[in-house]
Image (cartoon, rainbow, N blue to C red; front, side, top):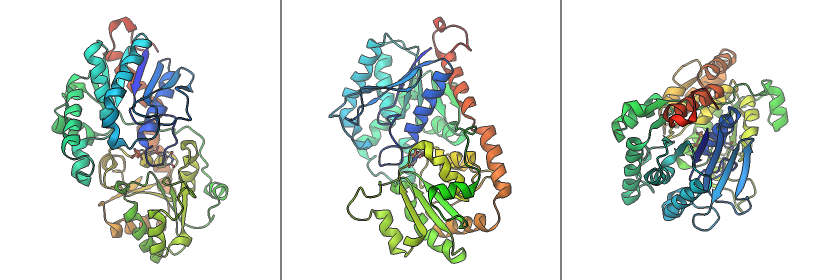
Length: 412
Ligand code: UDP
């Protein structure tokens, strides 16, 4: 089976954690890799956002990324993608023609949905879509921001249209599934709930002391971890004052931040470093900048607890990656986290934008012993977020929607 993934702004080969790269990049790369492993031939088309990278690059045997120019080759803030959307859509249509067509087209995020819809207008290819984020939910959680006026209307229209036109829409959590029906009118029989998988089988340094030594972290200190882009909606502005409160109860605690500005990239301290300094916490906070995804497991393995204080989180891969490494989570009660962190054995949910509640939950985990929670996290991640199950479920959707010429279900 030949599959085209459309991933507008999220290049599967980019290092996440910086300004523009995060969960969608990881989701698309890992899914492409696993689908190829199971016999699919996978192309991922994305906007050419880095002139140092080639037009095509292998992700894994059987999976490649194809970069199409849309606007000047170089970075582009996500909210300005609309300026180059038309050119991107034409690039996707051209790739489809050059490749001789695909059996299934799977689009990610709403700009890619626009490209998929254009493709669908010209070729009878079955469409599958994953939203990754919904305009209406985002707006309700964090206000209009850049997604205001015309931009929001165009996004909402496209999100509705893809739900009505696609053969299948993948929701990552029960909450998203309900939102898609209620807010977008996506028909129930089009919807499939398939949570993303993470690598629970990958060797992770369970021995915390070793992981800490390797990372240059204090071996005996209680460690709180934050992993993610330093967008305001990730709640890092709540985490720093929360950490100041934690230190009153647990003075030896340290906070490790993975993601954000690369150390030394800017001339002065970034906003996070400034906030840390403002609270007099410089000695207790380790700012590591973005790290390759393959290196994040070592950080999760080194931590006692991972904090996910987001104001808005469509799914929140970081929470389940943490569980997959046996590290409990304290998360804001928003989006997919409401579901993934619902079991009190794997984590604690707190109200968003509430440093005091965040601090209290972190202190509770740090002072109550994590051994039982660690095993519960491993069990939970293994049973709900297995990567193989994820790829198998998505492949089963492709077989269901692909034209009969693709052969019986179960083939590649
Ligand atoms: N990530 C990473 N390196 C970093 C920071 C983040 O590999 O320095 C990864 C993280 O492990 C996760 C993804 O980026 O896989 C973030 O996904 P999430 O769904 O939590 O947030 P999003 O970026 O989609 O808002």
